[in-house]
Amino acid sequence: MKKTVIFKLLVCLLVFGLIFTGCEEDDFPPVSLKTPGGELVDYSNLQEALDSIVAAGAYHITIYESQIIKPFTVGSGIELNIGGAESVVTIELESKGSLFIVSGILNLSKNVTLLGLDDNTSALVTVSTSGEFTMANTTTITGNSNTGNGGGVRVNTGGTFKMFGGTISENAVVGSGGTGSNGGGVSNAGTFTMSGGTIIGNEAIGSTASEGGGVSNTGSFTMTGGTITGNKTRQAGGGVYNSHSATFVKSGSSIITGKGDSSGNLVVSADNVEKDGFGHAVYNDIIGAVTKRDSTAGTGVNLDKATSNNWE
Image 1 (cartoon, helix red, strand yellow):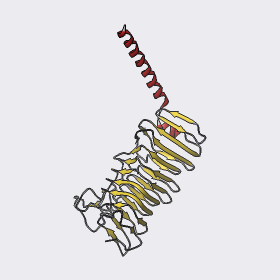
Image 2 (cartoon, one colour; image 1 turned 120 degrees about the horizontal axis):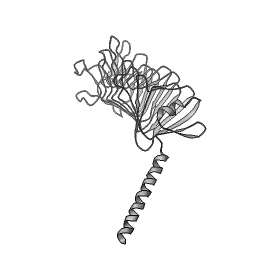
Image 3 (tube, one colour; image 1 turned 90 degrees about the vertical axis):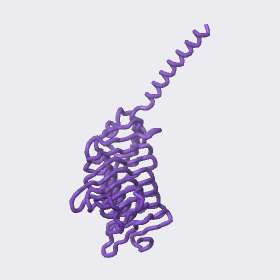
Image 4 (cartoon, helix red, strand yellow; image 1 turned 90 degrees about the horizontal axis):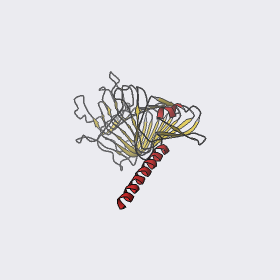
């Protein structure tokens, strides 16, 4: 009798567990979109959710499973907020081009990795004039190789990029020729503010003329937090390269040199030999008065391109 009762209890628990699990799956579709009017709409994949966005307004997308999508443009007047649910999900680029071209507003909120192509011809995220892009903790931009400027992110003139946290890693610019291509992690011609996060392991090595392993800046770059380290270039600015027309201010953050320690930022020759004097950490290409820093600029070292303080 006791065995029969126990058996029946186990069967009941098993059935209840299957039903309960099924309910959980139904409660969490692959993609959920919240419209500007507050309506929640479930989609079987991210591409369908993105393609449904036509009117101006703020949209919130929550992703429960990793996705593959074609290049998508966040249009003017649209604010797109994307986050993973409880665990990190990957949004992978299906075909060549920028995964996101931002003419409106794109916010990566949490638990999202953007994954590019190793033979791409565009930055993974391109911020157009008047566009605004932000990324926060537990977000990542990685795995993209571009023949033009900006392996991870390209900010065009008039665009804005705010990095509050997250990671930009393992991207590259591989353009060849006399001018090369610049900004393995970020190429900025607009306004870039970095208050947190890490730019690490990016490269600008397609040509001896390539500059800015971590960041190439021809616009305005303000760094108040975060770390830039482990990036590499062939010409100048292993961590950060600033053109003669750019503005650059650093405080309360770290730009770590790799001089004598390949884990930091480096300028190297074509045969991977360290090149001192070209700003392993930072290089300012000022006409007639180049300034640079080969050694680490830690949190206590403030830098301003417009002054002579703390340059080497």
